[in-house]
Amino acid sequence: MRAQPKASHFIDGDYVEDTDGTPFESVYSLTGETIARLHEATPAIIERAMAAAARAQKEWATWAPVARARVLHKAAEIIRERNQALSELETLDTAKPLQETLVADATSGADAIEWFSSIAATMGGSSVPLGGDFVYTVREPLGVCVGIGAWNYPMQIACWKSAPALACGNAMVFKPSEMTPLTALKLAEIYMEAGAPKGLFNVVQGMGRTGAALTTHAATAKVSLTGSVQTGANVFKAAAGGMRHVTMELGGKSPILVFDDADLENAISGAILGNFYSAGQICSNGTRVFVQEGIKDRFLERLAERAATIRMGDPMDPAIHMGPLISKAQHEKVMGYIETGRSEGARLVCGGHVPTIEGFADAPFVAATVFADVTDDMTIAREEIFGPVMSVLTFETEAEAVARANGTPFGLAAGVFTSDVTRAHRVAGALDAGITWINTYNLTPVEAPFGGVKESGFGRENGHAAIEFYSQLKTIHVGLTPVESPY
Ligand code: TXE
Image 1: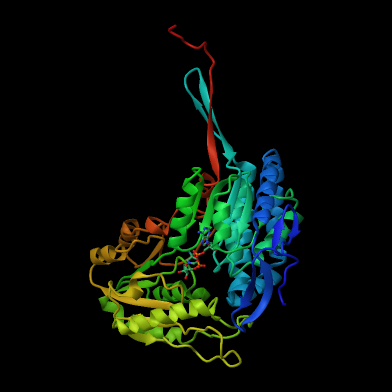
Image 2 (image 1 turned 90 degrees about the horizontal axis):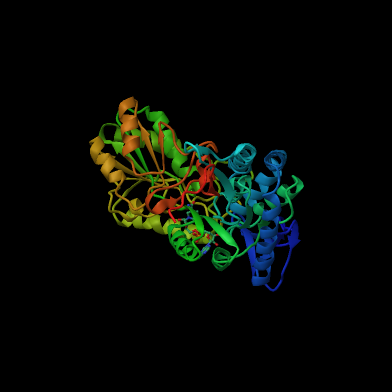
């Protein structure tokens, strides 16, 4: 077993096993090989993790801010030192190419932990003069936060959730996706090595039911989920009992608007990366590309030429751009959407097939696929596919493009490519999205808040905004004059 961890869970500073839990496997989708065998958390494991987190949180909250910051800063340094090994493990777990995991996964996690270390050191409240009495506010941790991850960016998600949580003085129990259980365990080791108190960051494994048990646990103050809209609705509802706080990073069907005056090559770069990076398995992908009539033909021609240069193959080969999908099930789902696109009348410009990759005949590859002549009512323009499938639609006027772009229950991200500076800002302002990029796409620096509107989510990760979702304000009113009592 190439990537077998010491045990399934990491609780109170160490690896823990409970073989009574339902066994499950992590599979490298390129080869179908089982890389690790684990056990789902039993109720006893969940109790141990929650108790450890509750105890550690109380201790952590008493630490001096600079001492907390030092731990986080050290953790970020260790992640960077181990980037090669962490990236290889992430590639095994997700089948994403090493070319990506080396620069986009653990490293962006390290960025988040480093950035939030400075927040840990500098966070404070405010004071409000009342002309005699005064009020001051204290920013307090929530307590034990539960993080639930998706399988597309396992390490990044674990870092993006734990960094603000720990910076604000909370502890975390994290459940990775059952498809990608491995890198979160490494992160737990790293936090301990960096000097965090035992139990501050714990990892428990399992399926949806483990996530559900954590969500409703009596000690849970907050749940942060990255996943599908349906799971988001389930978790939101469950968290409401007990009035637990939530952050929901859910799916999308984001639009990219390309106007006639756009820099064509730049717009194509945005569309290509916003559809084919990580084989299309990214929540903020711009899967509905609206192209203005005047440049439609040139856009499609160059897009197909450039898509043909994507090198598919063994994700461990640093020259490879695109690996297989996460699993056979996801492959089946994506190929099903491609079939639906064809049968509903979309025109295939490129891809649409399963490429034959020498030595990996059974791997779940999908060629980079572009459909043109897509209309708003087609299934491929409405539903999140989560694979390398781009839909190109055309439009005539700005108002029409904005209205159609907004015609979806999702609202995670959006892009606008134009050289007209006033239009760029006008359109960015009019699009229903938590994040809108102008003349670029899918950049998610830790400094910038990230999250969705409408059914794409609630709350924000990253940036100062994240603090609001991992802490609460206490108001303290200081009386300086005698209490005026009429009786
Ligand atoms: O996600 P799920 P899956 C979309 C994408 C993909 C589809 C299904 O379209 O094809 O969702 O992926 C845990 N209480 N996205 O099945 O089911 C679960 O164990 C608590 C978009 O992986 O939403 C996992 O850890 N937890 C997305 C996590 O929730 C529960 C990324 C996500 O699982 C639970 C992933 C419950 N009731 C998929 N049920 C994005 N926004 O990037 C499940 N879980």
